[in-house]
Image (cartoon, one colour):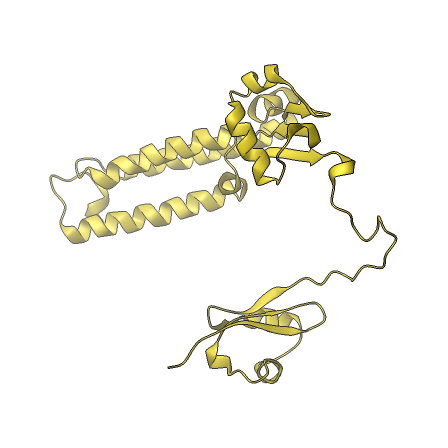
Length: 234
């Protein structure tokens, strides 16, 4: 374990071992911080990600620096991060500081230029975000807000919303959740057990295809199998 400590020089194998340890350690730290830290970068998430990246990067590139200090610092910061999230849930002022409310940018087709400047967003960027929501005109927007996670929430006016079967009083087909039962050529055995079926049943449901050649197949709540991608044979 000498490769973790400060050294005058490291062999290629010791550099690789140090990288492996750092990689596994960061995975454990990310698991401790939870899904929020990787799903969206809010203020607190950005600070911790920036700090941890700098702390662990130096001993991975400088043989004169040991890893022990960086690992202890990382653990301490992870616990501080968890404590800050817990306190923000208990103390309203801290919650507002770490997770500020959404900034209203458009209301009833009117742009709030003051809030746009407050969010430090150029108009071109706002239009780019609107296009992602298939909205080409601000006048069609009932409400749009810049969220703390760095995304734009857009709600169009009712008259511009797509017509649904409920609007026309038409019967609608029930929703069927679809899950991949074969992904990248591998059978999802956990899903097979969940639906109470086995490999033989799956083989009988994929039609003329061979299980070995199916790359992607899905199953819905009605247990209907649909083969999407088949490996071509030459």
